[in-house]
Image 1: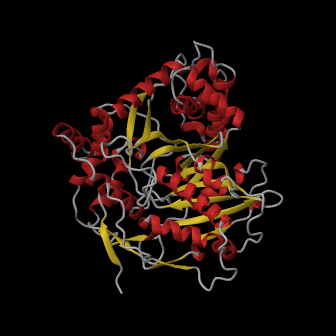
Image 2: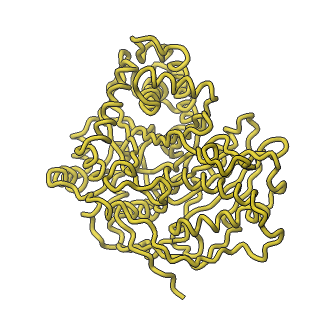
Image 3: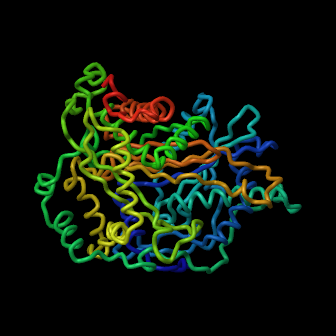
Length: 526
């Protein structure tokens, strides 16, 4: 029996389907570290964990019907959402050993788990399995804590919706714990029947007009469609976007660097943002672009490192090659008809900040303030909202012929500098996962959230570095991903992560009150 068609896939959703079809982008992972004074299933058998999660997942499937959908006609010009009739939970649960990393704060463990998850694309041709899965990593000597990482296809959710979903999952675990009706010790099946016929959330395009204005339309058409790649790139300022040009001839493999600040370090960054009347996002912005110049754009003044790790392609110190920064923005609170935080779907656009130049005398706070002003203008003004909507609204003009979108997406390899549209993309979910601490019904909760994981796979034609940040329980974590083929060795990306953390903490803990703080006195060794 054919699956029920729920509704057509709209343009922003189809953008994410197309990236999968073209093998240029895979998925998103959001997870939480959960503590329980009473140990969860002691074994590493998936069925024990599937049994624990069975009823909570069934409740969430009823609440969020898009979790029970797959994509039909995904290779055609008119893909659709199809509703599954049942979901077998057992194949969706993977239990991993924490022995894959031996670090005390589990950052190596999480890096490797995220890397593995990002390099497993969802098979859109498989119409028996939903577009999400769970990875569980027991940690601690008594296995009284575990990471639960939810990985999903971007067509069914974004970071905000995943934040809400993981909160609700932990909430359901606690309600199950408090209930007198516990899961059967030996369930006959892990199959969950889908009986609801509720509609899935409407697309962003049906909620607000995203179609570009005539001037924007002409500008985008001339740059993105009509101009040959060599002319487009000649007219643009050259920007740094990786050490090796993007290519469709090598596999899109993601590598991951993960860091987590302590509560004290996180408080220092937050306190600094308040003192400077700015945001944590803006401080991370400047720290990240300073780190790019320090690691990648001053390589020849640091010839030893460059020779060891292929840094010969790095830019001479003093070269004024630019950077391009991308700021993803949630549209949920920006459009007139607000979208609830727990609605599952992708409602994200982005602001592009181009022609950023880091010189020895570039001031940390001047750069931070400039960025902050751009973000405020881009998210609080009618023109800013229109730009965010038009950023993807022009997708409506692409041909509906089979394969046309894939050809357009992959053409960015020859249209953009180095085949990538940006140097860095930084997504920040901010503080979240507060359901348990704020709910009076969970005062006797067994499962409590300790910290958070947020990460996105690399993209062949996206940014050279993709940073994903989130804060829970007073601790900031940042995942940085990059395409393996973008750098000369994993160590290049890992050095960037370490340099970013060094700069962030140096500014927050030591030099917060220095008004003349500049690149030169933050990175004097470079």
